[in-house]
Image 1 (cartoon, rainbow, N blue to C red):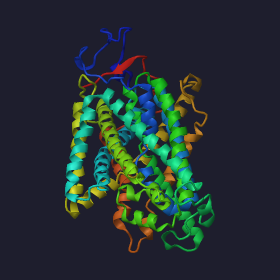
Image 2 (cartoon, rainbow, N blue to C red):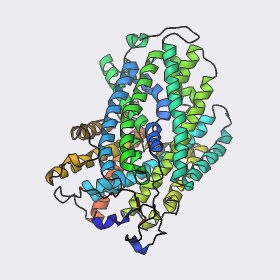
Image 3 (cartoon, helix red, strand yellow):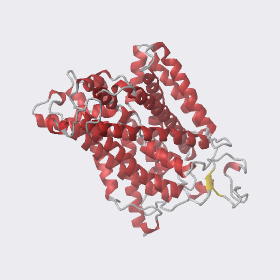
Image 4 (cartoon, rainbow, N blue to C red):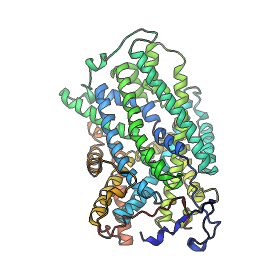
Length: 533
């Protein structure tokens, strides 16, 4: 990308007004729409910490325990958490260095290949755009914990859909406050559940059963996974199944890059947010999984039944099973309410991320320019409109069996999306690191520098490539072969390849030379990003 493309950055004067002598693209003036840097540091940090806490922890952790056992589940979440933390440090270095850029979409174009940026951007947009209706539908299913009438599902989907659209249309200032409140609720809920599990484990529940590490001694791993023999094979594959489950739970952390253009004082707030993700989010997940494995057996009938039925309500949560086993009343309703708020918040964040990723693609000329149109309150209105239209796919879940199956299939093909994005971030960082070396630039200039690099980025790239390659192994264990699951487990890969080589063929793009790579920063303090539309 040429330096001319960065005329969208405008230096603000001391009074807060945009300097009139700056060049406005496409003949615009001071009324030209631009992104508002209205997200405060506390909002960015809370979104970073709680943005990924949702059904993956509240509901999905039970499946991880059943597949891998208490030790297998803990190791799986710990390993994937460390890898995701390394990925966030790689992304953090690039974001803090140039918060004027369009996140990993632009970094991929600038440091690897414009075709890579095109493929990364559209793959991430599809992932976020499809995840929004999935979360909305999940929220409507959660409500069925109280209202079992299936005919009411469309009503709940409509209410939640209107709610998240209104929050996004209101502007990033209100979006930030909304997510701050919901993030606070999620963090308090997780902390409360961790304390509850600790009390239950130590014998403070009504059943007075002091569990300690009983289940760790009895069956630390799953010796019967998939009915495989010998037990060593079952233990290993049960543990391996946890890795993809954990990757799903941590998915969405990379969405922090989408708020880069709208964060106030981004170099400070992004640096704080990246550190918060690594220590607090990974710590919360790992500690929660540790205590779940201490409080309930992986072969508990209620846990196995919940994972088989997959209700999507609090009844599936390992926390609820622990509460009911310990004889505690009322709490299941509270947990279900927390899961509902998490689903609503996640749908809101995915709609935001989808609209911003489409805006960034349009800014780079990799999507129709109309999607870069920004209202005076900083909302990319046409991008938001298209992404909101995709959210209507949630109504497929209310249809007959065929429509519902189609919706579930569309939801499943986004499973690998986060891992593909994480690998793209790692590759971009590796190339950027080498480019700085070739051009004689010192890493001491970076406002945020991690001691884990470049080895951390290599670990992320190699590890997730291996996890992704073996992601669909369970389809081979099914009798007969589960062809539909196999396709949904791997469809992202050919989709990404088609996007990459399609753009490369159409635009004749080339891999960026290390010597000619644009490793400089284009960020100006107190600046905003103007629409090129």
